[in-house]
Amino acid sequence: MERLIVVSAILPIHLKKEGKDYTVSISPGGLVTALRQALYKRKAIWIGWAGTEKLTKQLKEKIISEGTKEGFILYPVSLSDEERENFFDGFSNGIIWPLFHTFQAYARFQPEYWEAYKKVNKKFATAIKGLVHKDDLIWVHDYHFFLLPGYLKKLNVKNKTAFFLHIPFPNPELFFKIPWRIDILRGLLDYDLIGFHTYIDRKNFLDCINELIEDIDIKVKEPITEISYKGRKIKIGVFPISIDFDKYNSLAKEAKPLKKNGKIILGIDRLDYTKGLIDKLKAYRYFLEKYPEFHCKVKLVQAVAPNIKKLPEYDQLKVEFEHLVSDINGRFGTERWTPVHYIARRIEFGKLISYYRYSDVCWVNSIKDGMNLVGKEYAASNIDENGVLLLSEFAGAATEIHDYSILVNPYDIEGTAFSLYKALSMEEKEKRRMMKGLREHIRKYNINWWSNTYLETAFGRKIEDFPILED
Ligand code: GDG
Image (cartoon, rainbow, N blue to C red; front, side):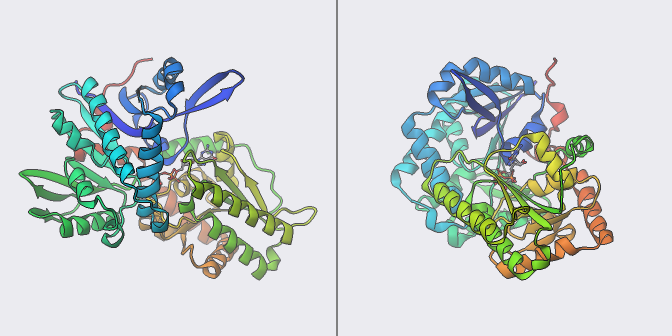
């Protein structure tokens, strides 16, 4: 029986120091949230770095047992400090993440980053070779592994490989800045399937291939585009990722009501410059200046989960964000009203569901985002169908659910403030119509739909076809 081997840069675990000991739990983040729900109890082997070298050895047992509870077999790969620095902080998060999210100025094209990227891709390929069976299917996630299938081929691993990119793919103008652009494209073409969130990402990828790769034949077809290259066929598809609708929908029924004395505008983001947090606060400040009738009647609840990426941009972002929060609270706040309720930590899941169910507006302001799951989670939890989603037109989700949300351009401070005003002033009937449509869409195109469509295209299998882990 074939097994599913899942590869992601970091294992889905979170280590927390408690006294002298550590607790291990499943970590936050879009990729993990989505995959965890798709793979639950499916006995997949999940390969990745555990996030810390020393502790990986010390906590191996705990990590493995935490995985077993979820029905995964977690397999930690070791990385040296130098590999972590140059592969993670360097190539992946210091070049690809900013450039693919249109933050070109943050990209540092250091040659040693590229060397580490190749080395770590090879290391993962070697780890896979050590545990793969003949019929296993290999599902690789995200921008850390553009070169992995090439190394697998060199190691004579002939299993089918499929890749999914969780972040946007940039247009040629941006992509061509990368000194190693051809190696990256050729590397990707070693996969049997390449999946993107949106048609824009697919178009950008095909435009890059068209211009840089010779002797290639591209047949753009729906739903799956086919590329012929070096005697092989490669499939290219669009698979907008989603969430476990039923889970959010049913948990919301039990959600504890929020103490409210006014309308709540909700923001749930990781601390990342791509999420448009600074522009959000500027638009909110402008909104409070322009519409004083809303003073004391609204509150922006903004949770900002810490980022594991250790880069100076994140420290600067935090400082600038906190400065704006205190500026707004200092300027507009009163003894009884704090306009921004800032939560500088990850909020507990039950509380998150309460916020989703009882907030009047959910505000996703990404400068660029592969998909963004927060808006979908909000809709699935908004069982009273009285909330409004304010959604950046630059989040992948906007290409899918634009009819059921108010779209904003995060660069347009005045326009965004006006859209917030519209969201807060919308008639009940219109709110219900939009939220109903949004919920129906997400109920249908849920995480099972996503994983099954993807796995069927990649391997001719559905998630149900993989063995289930007995309790
Ligand atoms: C990448 C792409 C794409 C956040 N704060 C808290 C919390 N979260 C959870 C949310 C959601 C997840 O983290 C964030 O998902 P996103 O999709 O918004 O963003 P990324 O982490 O950047 O994910 C993204 C995704 O991959 C999947 O392909 O959609 O575009 O960038 O699930 O709920 N959860 C809790 N407390 C928090 O404070 N409990």
